[in-house]
Image (cartoon, rainbow, N blue to C red; front, top):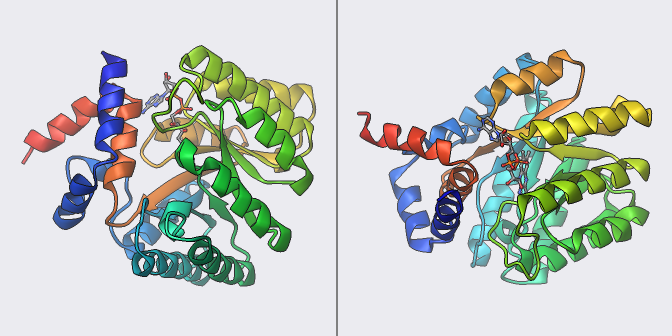
Length: 305
Ligand SMILES: Cc1cc2nc3c(=O)[nH]c(=O)nc-3n(C[C@H](O)[C@H](O)[C@H](O)COP(=O)(O)OP(=O)(O)OC[C@H]3O[C@@H](n4cnc5c(N)ncnc54)[C@H](O)[C@@H]3O)c2cc1C
């Protein structure tokens, strides 16, 4: 049943029709539990509240699978506004973005132009930018773009997904770039030809990747809500004397807020991924796919006036 629900929500997450409808009707159905608002002003308010609690942030102007240049350029403009707001308000925040929102599906030229504009502004303002990882069909291209950008910019990192068979090799290949990587389990529906179907295998691969990346001396963001993975990370950083400046934990806004604060109290760096914007639908559906308990919460939201 859980698997069925997961596939159902991942299927819904790809609907262009529902994405458009959701944009038109605004944040609904409990989406505001996971999305900080539709405007940068609302996001800034949330970031300030999180920073007050000593939680760092990475902020994401929502948008994905963009298929026209005008929209991709507009999303890049929004990212630049977010960088300006971070600098102006002196926020403890970075930004995250998706290659398909920068124009990956349009042309290499569009995506590179947008990324260079963003990274220049981010560099001027000492803001770090993480390129989120999307579905498998975009993985190779995303890594190629990351490598090209990393030759020129130090303030860019990306994400690797533990559910993909290819990831260990990608991590080894990227090592020469001294990359700052966020490691995650992976959020998209992938075929067993490219991704481990069993949760156990994903978890084991995740642990292996965390250890490998830390061992190689690179900055590692462990982005998970899973206690087993968090505890494993704590154990190996102690065992191998990994300095606290070399890693951090990350979680999504609205998920396990108490655990986030516990980690801060224990002296770990904890970063919250804060999405905002009108294009919240796909992101929200993936969160529902991850945890059926969230669906009950949403149903309550629908029937509550
Ligand atoms: C900061 C961040 C950035 C991300 N970026 C990307 C990206 O670029 N690309 C990508 O594909 N994916 C990304 N993801 C999503 C990621 O791939 C997973 O889909 C998502 O994090 C769920 O996996 P999990 O590691 O939390 O563990 P899961 O296997 O989903 O959960 C494991 C356990 O965590 C606990 N848990 C989970 N949720 C809750 C909850 N709501 N309340 C209480 N306990 C809970 C439960 O004990 C659960 O059994 C990102 C995730 C984070 C946190």
